[in-house]
Length: 119
Image (tube, rainbow, N blue to C red; front, side):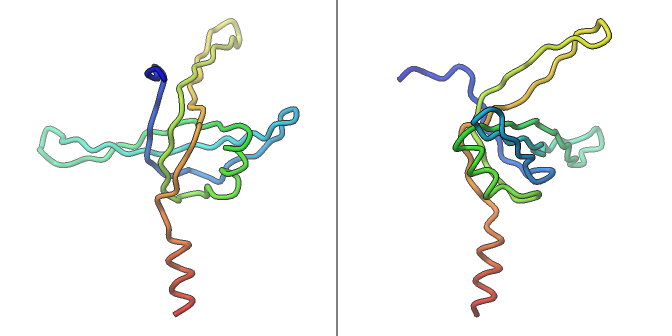
């Protein structure tokens, strides 16, 4: 297998539950993912910046995302970048999204809640 030339890995939290649609005979989900970066400002104070990413998934990955991905729950994902160009009012617009191939739940708070309810 060759090297993947278009591969993205992110860890972050969804800004909302995935929006689910059926496109033809395939399931499609979309959501935004917030990631954070930390840098020092000119006063040597640590500052956090947030970036928002548009995520889309199809088929089996979309079905799993619908079941497990929830607003604010930390996930890791792997996918590929895709930029689409469209014209509106005679002006070219660019829209970049990440097509998610797979994901991993990192925030297991629902398991912790279940364990605390069992105690």
